[in-house]
Length: 303
Ligand SMILES: Nc1ncnc2c1ncn2[C@@H]1O[C@H](COP(=O)(O)OP(=O)(O)O)[C@@H](O)[C@H]1O
Ligand SMILES: [Mg+2]
Image (cartoon, rainbow, N blue to C red; front, side):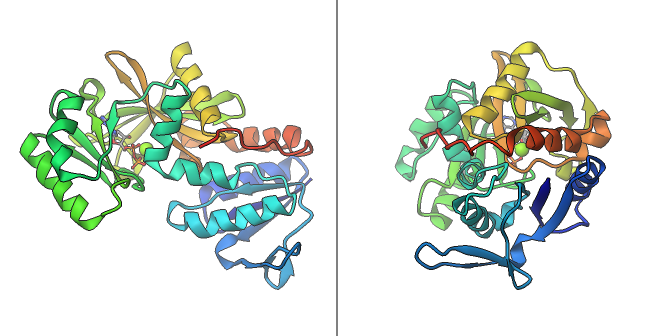
């Protein structure tokens, strides 16, 4: 097959691994720096150009769009979809996953258990919102945060109120800030399940090394392999499916009332390979081999 990987380039570990596995399986691979692509749009004549040539006629395109390039990256992916190219992750699914409010709405709609989440744009509602969540502390989360940046633990009502007021001042659209039940039972620990198709291909537990409540590896957390319960495995697969993603990194916390899904990452890192010894990149290439030739499925999430 002729495969294109849209990424920031070969230096990236995930990209390197995808190239390695694809080539080992006899495919031809191009790494496309989507940042350096441009789009030319005319009626019935839309094309993506890279290094002076139109990007076309790939058997499969694997997007690895960085969180800080979501808009540009998904515009490129969307264009390629419209040209009829098979893309592993649909532009709409990537966009959806990058918005934590939209994600929570979709996950809840499809019956995936999540921490209780409330959203408002009115300072006057704060007391009522905190009441809805029940106890303190609460989590305040920016809808477009990543790597644990943008997640705040508010210990007291006063702290929650003043933090929210400050955010409302800076963000007047109201949809960029989520208030969430704090899962204290397993604070500082979460699970990352790497889903490919309808299977979990690797899973690890992440623990913060200090007393941080955030377990992101980017925040200095450490990972160890973990075996998921059947319920957790089902949750991971359902969450990826609900979000319309063929490849996803699903974050789960173990709470007193069972597993809760925190988020679904559309471009999960491959560091999990080193921790679990699983060949995640190989599974992705295998998935592409089996699915790329079929007529692309429509996104059916509806939100
Ligand atoms: N409701 C919550 N209760 C307890 N800890 C949380 C909660 N939400 C997030 N965290 C912690 O913060 C980390 C980052 O949150 P997450 O929603 O995954 O955002 P990000 O996109 O920044 O990774 C999680 O991995 C988890 O350790
Ligand atoms: Mg996360």
